[in-house]
Amino acid sequence: MKIYSLILLAGVVFMTCGLAACTQSASAESMDVAGARDYCHSKVEKTLGVLSRDSVDYTMMPRNIAAGDSVWHCRKATPDEWCAGFWPGVLWYDYELSGDEKIREQAERYTASLGYLSRKPVFDHDLGFLIFCSYGNGYRLTGRDEYKDVILASADSLATLYNPTVGTLLSWPRNVEMLGGHNTIMDNMINLEMLFWAARNGGEHRLYDIAVKHAETTMNNQFRPDGTCYHVAVYDAEKGNLLRCMTHQGYADNSTWARGQAWAIYGYTMVYRETKDKRFLDFARKVTDAYLERLPDDYVPYWDFDDPTIPAAPRDASAACVVASALLELQGYCVPEEGKRYMDMARKMLVSLSGKEYRSADSRCSFLDHSVGHKPAGSEIDASIIYADYYYIEALKRLKDLES
Image 1 (cartoon, helix red, strand yellow):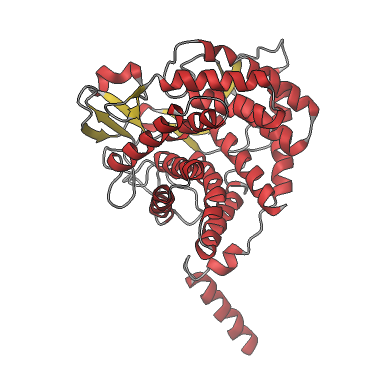
Image 2 (image 1 turned 45 degrees about the vertical axis):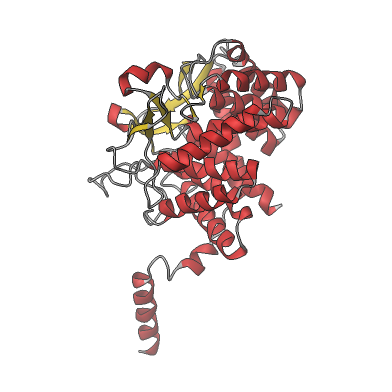
């Protein structure tokens, strides 16, 4: 009878244990970084095998895999294909983690197909994603002067989108008329990194100033008091005043689009790293906590935190990957207690993403399933998407470095 009672009591405790009460046991959950690294390497090799069945076109970049498919849908590396830099970036990270020289050779070839973008007039803010994920990682690992030259030229091109009256980069020149003014989207925060890097590596100091002002203006205008963000801010290009905030890829203008909040967390963490300005650290912590407190039990957000169909709404693994990677950096800037909390949350996210619910099946070429691209447009819903894989392997690399 005593044994039965103890078993029953243990079951009751387990069933009633909330997230806060279970923190200690959950934080002890280990992340198999080596196993995840090997898994990613096998999927990279699988993708390269599929892409090389015919003659390889290094300008065709993996973009997404629909729920019912198994191989990547590829798109041409053009100025308006904003995801084209992520596949070369995945290859560079895989080479760094695996040491496989065959992967390095492929990374070089796919990266080279993007170099022409540095010599063209800038199309939009995504030039940072295109060049810094590819050439940026390539330069970090090889130190090649030609890679540096491409990054510096691209940073100068990106800076031409800056409007000093507004204080931000114009994100989408093609959408000025549609949105009614100078538009700045939260995604743009990530592309400031290329400006900061260029200013530290031979570029003009004005690139640093532009990046800081963009971060300040966005911080002041594009967030609600609780730290959640609007996807888009629209300004009067001539007077500089804020006209309105809205969404483009979220559920509603006043909803919190999960990946937009993820870009904010990653972006302001990076801005603090580059500036050491405590305002940006405090803000990174604020926008992070606004995200963390609304997560479901498996730490992978619904595509929009305010979708009224929750819990039937789709999850967005890509947002979880971006945040997990960001938290692994942010934890190092915080006091020990808070840093440990962020580290624990990052681990939990990666454990969940690495589990059977989100890991792609053996038949699929991707790392992860269940991401959402642009739900209002009906695009890339419950799909594998290349930027989810990019930030997942980046997070693995960061965690490995911290554990070394």
